[in-house]
Length: 207
Ligand SMILES: Nc1ncnc2c1ncn2[C@@H]1O[C@H](COP(=O)(O)OP(=O)(O)O)[C@@H](O)[C@H]1O
Ligand SMILES: [Mg+2]
Image (tube, rainbow, N blue to C red):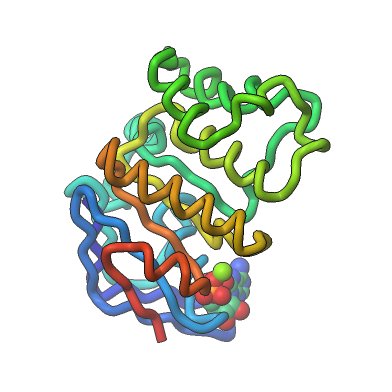
């Protein structure tokens, strides 16, 4: 589903060289490595189309630079993203926030899928609340529901447990494992959290 080859990203003062790696359908991969090793950069390369210096990234068997504008929109619909800049809109309720991708991609949401997520992520009693009143753990589960609402083939999350206590971390991990197992969603998480990487199927170590 995703393959990187000879991938290098240069910033002004830093050069990040990635080992070759291939992620298959149904994988649950943790990207781990010390702070500054390029975890967030790799995610940005994949989901934000930031330019790289050399090498290749293939998503769904096509080099990223070969995607035209329209195809990029279709691609984005197949990716569920939970990044550090994922925000809930404060003037919208939780359920309105979860349905936002429907507006953006003009896609119908499957009611049964929505009920499944609400139930699995244990957010039924939050739906009419506003983001301001949520705890950090609740907010992360709502962001996960929104990332999953259009049934993406791949879920990509950057440090999804970084501000969570161990109970909320375990809850979120349980959700990820469930989605990977039951929906066969391919999951990629950048994490420094051993509890998360231990729950994943494979580890991609950056240095
Ligand atoms: N926009 C940027 N401009 C310049 N340097 C950057 C930028 N983003 C990241 N870097 C540098 O790239 C390296 C990798 O950063 P990052 O991908 O955030 O690592 P990680 O997520 O593993 O902590 C760091 O040295 C960081 O300072
Ligand atoms: Mg990071």
